[in-house]
Length: 286
Ligand code: PAF
Image (tube, rainbow, N blue to C red; front, side, top):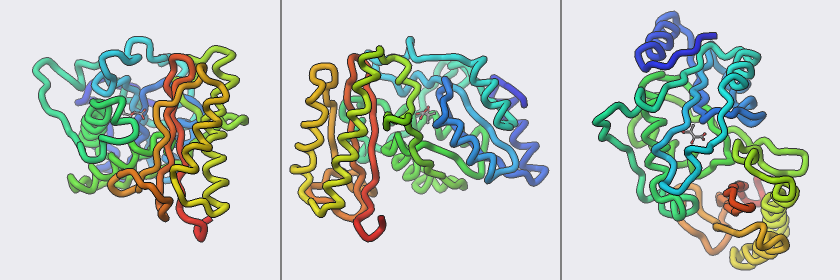
């Protein structure tokens, strides 16, 4: 396994692989890898000749009062995990390699960035789109793997790939959960013992929503209030940021459950903001 920090090195290695006819799968990450990332890497390994993992805590996707400085990092552990999973290359750039002095170019998808996480994190998706486009241009993967815990991120990036005619396949991968339902996230490391105990309520609110949808409830307001009631059981330890139902094309808010709906929750557990969701595909697809 190779570990490189510069754009030129990363590009040279993936170019050589492609020249030999080998397909490249990319799993972009911000490090502090967990079993969710491992599932993306395994899938990439199954479907490609070579797997690249990028480990880069991307400053442009953090707002001014967010957790960039304290975002958890353990590169030595990430290296061990990647090596055990058969990764061929870790791209681990320093911020200056991605954003050199004078850097001025950003990618935006404003219409898809106003709802859900875009509301409380107005510059977040611009940072994600910009860095992921750069990773795609540097590494030129055949396929790229993203977890559906960050569903809005996946839909926005997929749109970018279509809009900019990028020649790669976006592969969505299911959310990996703890046994009690909590979606895996590097940010779970911030939770105190008490916070960790109540955090699965976010998933429980989504389970309740899915049960209501299966039972035929279509009014979003009714489902939302049942979900809010579940989160409120642990107020003020859990504080809702949003509970939102959006259609999966334009990510606009829906009042009634249509066939393809993203049901998404963001909530603060203590000071830690966690997100989770499920995709409602209609009763006939279950
Ligand atoms: O999902 C993440 O970890 C990040 O948003 C990503 C896609 C690696 C871009 O920095």
